[in-house]
Length: 153
Image (cartoon, rainbow, N blue to C red; front, side):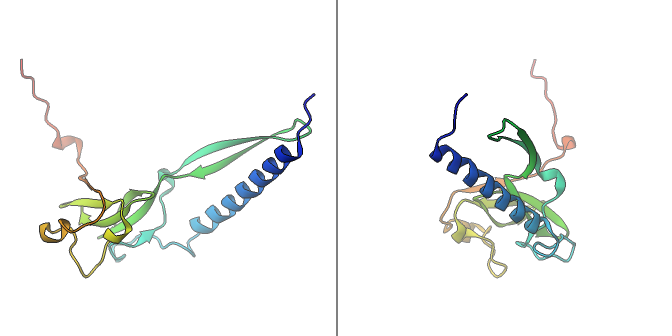
């Protein structure tokens, strides 16, 4: 039988405490008191409540000193939801920022917070876009009907 050392036990305790704190934070963020629901009146650039289908549940396995295995599930997301106006939302990867745009024009995101959406400036215009500081990515949603298969034979 392997006996856990003091450092190992401290690590396990700290991990469990941190997981509990993260679970509590997630519950707080998921509540409607913190993030608003998206509506057609929600301003573009507003971070809104994350739809449930944009998360995944990740199992956590913890083995205790008594060899009891505790299995818990934690909701995890790699994106957050941003309103782009008119009741539409987009998933923005954590570490990126909504710059501007909509489904008709394309949505621009950046990895630099300085490029973040400003309702007073159209940062997607060519004139302003050349002054952005980060790496920009354009997301253009498409429907299956937009694709056409061509057989070149």
